[in-house]
Length: 532
Ligand code: FAD
Ligand code: SIN
Image (cartoon, rainbow, N blue to C red; front, top):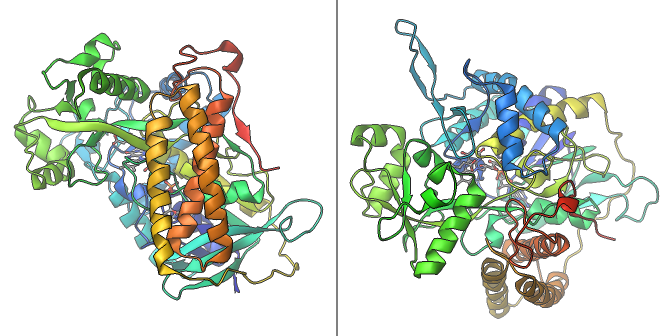
């Protein structure tokens, strides 16, 4: 049993920023399932969207966010997050974050923050650290956390399930009391308790066969919250990033939208700039439009990828602005200053998640969700590029303020120790591996960029079968991280399919050939699921 004042699950931007904010008030445990920097945050390239220039305005950022969100954003949430942004960016800089700068136009020798551009933004407003923004965020925040004696980080610790009063059989308000956590090094399960638990576990890209996300992104937070009785919403809105590097040896390497922001152009294998016919913003159209256009281009021609071409820009500019993309592609034999980059769409971001308000509060007392795991209403049916780091930053701050205002009571409930199955049969691990592959492939084939009712029904049936099998394993066998994550991706796959089946229209990232148009009756409606 390990007791803390705050239990933070996840060490990406959301978890670290929250932990730093509350550390002066109590003991914080950060539980993270791999090494401390490993997170979606760590791979963020483009940057953080926020209004910092005189030529920009909150109105314009709000408008762009609402346009991308295709009618489903919550306007008050959008405004709050956009308007809180600059103050949080200033705090991030104070904590040690170094954004890229450029010479200020009207001051001798002065510098100002360099602003990038991405799809759907009508202004340059993306603060970035070259093309490794996330790595720089993790560096700065982990250094700051190391200076805080109240923060203890538990690496290679995987949260299995939340502990709630309801699960323990108590009537009345459902309250989160902590979590059971699998210690991968010691191969044992600990009970972590705290009056406040923060889910900052990120997204679920690994539910799909092809993704830009690292291996940690298995939707654990969404699955745990759903099992605990929290509401989960809008899971059908999975964002596919249009440009993931297509190369047999490259695993999940993103080619930032900022490359298109700086003039990169999408072309078919024959060299046709096919986005010209799809949208007035061409290659910089919103992500859902670009991903669907690439998907259609590849299906029409049978091509395995399309090209992203930035060779018309000076080589020095490309190498300085995109050093990581340049070097990584070069390692795979592609010199992006001289030849186009082969790209394909891949699952990238989960717009839905655990339902929260803008302060991270879920429907379970003492449980907060912040960052990609949460569904605040900022993104609606399609996230505007670089708004997710902004959301994580602002909502982590607001959740920290909220928990310090509303102190949660310490519990005197007796919490039982973890009970697990005791069978162990290494031969059977092949079944776990097979089920992983099957879920990821069927989600890619049946619940991808373009959906139909028939494919969704097929996916639903297969997932139900797989879940039965996983259920037996889960209760009989000694837990392993593969098994725990498999159980979670199966749950998240189920939630995505069920939400997709509930929405009889096409909107934003959810495109169903059986209902190719948006249905005005659904323009304000979320798809919400709660375990009965
Ligand atoms: P994460 O940063 O993903 O952190 C989740 C943490 O939870 C990790 O530490 C993980 O190990 C831990 N965890 C997960 N499950 C468990 C468990 N069961 N137990 C314990 N720990 C667990 N967004 C932008 O705004 N701008 C960008 O430029 C941008 N670029 C991106 C590029 C790539 C390649 C990717 C994949 C995403 C990008 N995004 C970008 C999205 C953005 O990075 C994420 O949405 C954001 O970083 C999420 O932050 P987070 O703190 O919520 O989660
Ligand atoms: C990118 O750099 O293209 C990713 C930006 C984002 O996902 O917001």
